[in-house]
Length: 145
Length: 443
Image (cartoon, rainbow over all chains, first blue to last red; front, side, top):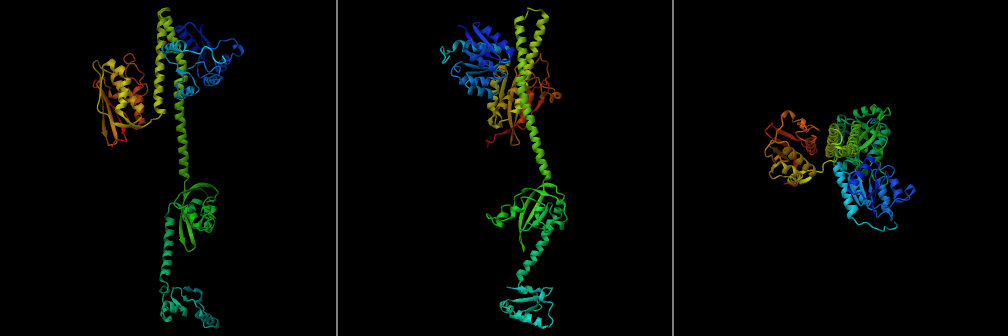
């Protein structure tokens, strides 16, 4: 069974870079992309045109997004019994202490800063794959799933 | 018990009315004396003789002080004091106004006339509320909760800021100091009134300047964020995609394409370093210094750990004397040592780089640190330039780096209230010096 990854990212350049990096790291991944928080919630709740999308195994969430930003998405996710078990990895350019603290308070599963250098970004994506998508045991029957 | 009847003197003619008066006076149980203008006694009644122990003829023609020396002297002193007090009032640089318990002005000086724009006679006897509408008279009045004395005592010696009004109706800020004065008419209050328009204006100006400074500091912090995030974002795209291009298409296009892509990759990564350095520089200023008692030796040790790669690679010999406790921001001091020692290792002749760090007490309050190396040295004409932002003395091919290191050093040292200096000659090595305050814990 392929691993379903939801990437919430508004910059097309970053989306493509992440796709390229995952292609190198693990070809069996299905990377779904939405570009803001409202779309992310619709995807996760299978609303509107997202009626038939799979439940993601992991969410990669950017913080600065149009309409509904990543912090709000994180808040909604962790208040929702059926969604809170999906590991949510913050993947953002912000390395501000305030953002880091706030995200962990909102129960993000981990916080990663996007490295500036391409090599470092690729190796970060590889470690996300090696850890979250390979080593980590995820629940098979999510509550209310 | 002694009473002066000053008006009886003129009617000494032997009229029957005068005689009746004389008899009445003579019969009075109170001692009675009449005096002339010089203060000498003219008549004395019987009631005076016994208590004072004088016979009547011993008193007539004598000064009245014979009977009441202390009282007379007190009156004289009081009169003298009043004279002196007027002199003091006029000599005071502030407007002075003396007010009685009814809130009426009984005395004022020429400064008060000038300050309020009235002539003296326009103010004398007038209510003080004419010139100080609120807050003055109210403070002197007794109420159910406090006596006159208490009301006044609460105000003595402290400056009270109020608003005063000139004759032309214009208002100005004042500070008044009150002091009580006992007098024949009861307790009077002297108010020294200072026009504080200039001080108020300075205070307003100062607040404005502080607000401006805060705003510009905030803008600088904002700039740091823009540099860190908004500028880096698009640049990260340029850098990443040119690197991706280079990796995937190197050798697949023509040699021109390879060269162009290489320049683009190089330019983008240099700009990334510049932005990161700029950010590091602005952080030194915007985050402020957290001055504590710390061990400068610990800070150096941490700097050397951070530099271990460069030290190992160059084979440098970094030594130091025992270093003191100082009052400094530990993170910044570490960065300062790291930049200085890093430079010392970097700008080197072939051979073993040697760096030695010492500290010497100067003036009892400060430690002067020296970081001495045996490197290339610097021509004195560049001493100013090297501490500037992005100033470099070498080509990029010779030495990498953006030229921010010493600018950051300078900023750190200045944040510690000191300045950094250099002593060097080309080929003779360099010594950088800076001073830090002695730790408060050291005895």
